[in-house]
Amino acid sequence: MLRRTLKDVAESFPAAQFVDTAFGPFGVLLTRASDTIGAHVAALLAADEARREAALEARPPLVVATDASKARNRRGTGLGCVSNAGAHHMRMACDARSILEGELLAIDMAVARFMHPKLHILTDSRLALACIEGTYEGRLEIADVVERIRNRIKGRTVKFSWVRGHSGHPLNEVADRLAVAARRCHDANVSPEVASTIANNIVASLKNPLPETA
Image 1 (cartoon, rainbow, N blue to C red):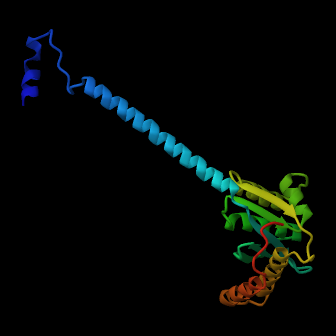
Image 2 (cartoon, rainbow, N blue to C red):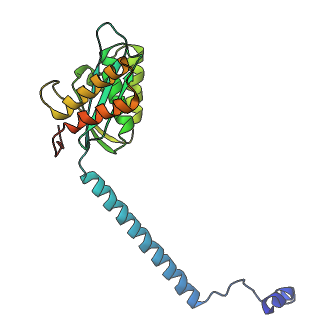
Image 3 (cartoon, rainbow, N blue to C red):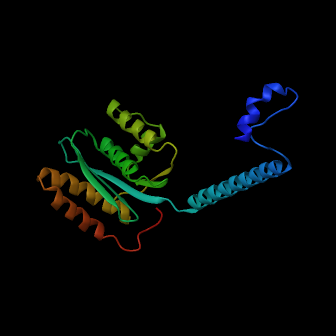
């Protein structure tokens, strides 16, 4: 009430200056304290973010093997991928025209399904790796898959490695069996429930602990 009254008569006292909020030495101290606390909180947040980034950098990558299976003289390929944590996916790519396209589609499935920030993709197709690295160019449909893979891995740490197929590498062997199962289940019109059971049984054959690296 007093402040409102003073404002109403302020024009009668031009030499007087009225402020909305009293601000003296105590106010200065409050401002300094607020700035100090804000800077301290910002430093704590920055340190916490640095710790999280360091912890993420120290984590090993999720290793995922991929493979494809194609019957002779038939369109379509079975796709399979499995991680060293035991997670797995398989499906039939009915429109795939070549085993190379199937191998790339299996890699695309892996980077799409496994959203881990650090991935190590294993494939037994040197040609698929060459496509991703840009040292080999295939048909348009292959280029489309390669572009999709590159877009999916932007902002992520993804390493690609070649492993020899059918050489006893546990993840590669399971990925191969998943790809074959995907194709055969499709050909036999197996129900999704039965196909899932088959896939689980295949992955159960992996020995524990699973390999951490290639």
